[in-house]
Length: 111
Length: 116
Image (tube, rainbow over all chains, first blue to last red; front, side, top):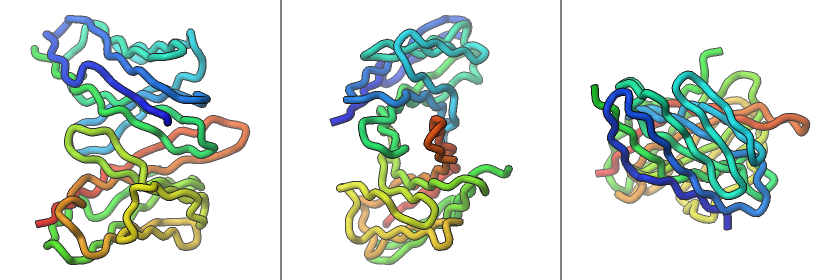
């Protein structure tokens, strides 16, 4: 069964303190790994899609990487406005667009 | 492009009542998904449509839940005889599915349901 596990569940950083979020996945045939950002009371907002091991994508202070078993979301010199829940999801083995989500990592960046 | 729109944003109901939510997808998108999210958890898949056809339903979806997408445009999700365990954020997402390209889901802001 397709499964996604994110760690840590919560992360507190000081402004400027870089760190990484982990997403471990088990899927029989990965057709895409997605990172979303979710602010309180809002729907997930798309950040990145990764398709193959070794692929990397960047957007401002965020960089996502992918291996055969996990993905990392690196946050460089974060700012308070980066505070949010970051969700990882996979397109699994079924032939649909259905995403399997992890439980998310809630990031708090203090000034 | 105004994004995915969901109404209402909040719904408070009493146990046993029926509720209906509406989702208006991005206009050219042919797929529409419903997810449910509880506090501290990631979204959980409920069902999805391609145009007007409902192609998949989660095994977790109770028979009290029904979804429609008439004419392949907006969609409604109805919950009959609500229970306190139905309290959650109900998220709608849409996508443009093509065989030759990778699919990306765009989410609405959700409907927060509270069952008293």
